[in-house]
View: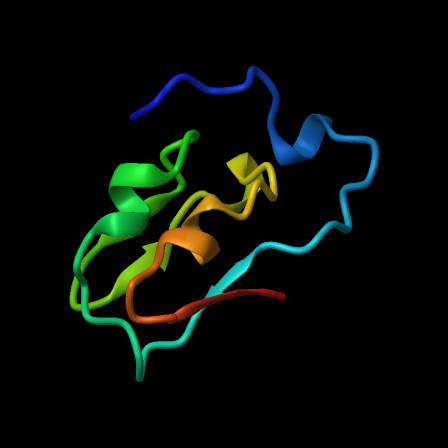
Length: 74
């Protein structure tokens, strides 16, 4: 896991901010989101799973880096 910016979604001023959504039809389980998420929000099973959404800081790195285009912001 990369260095965390030091705050979580719970601590943000806007707790209603969007979080990434995984399109299970497009996800190839490559693990890019798991490797690139600065807060370690993803786990990998058959597809990527946003297992810790409260730790998401809405940085968009996972969406930008997904080679399959399987992630979008909700």
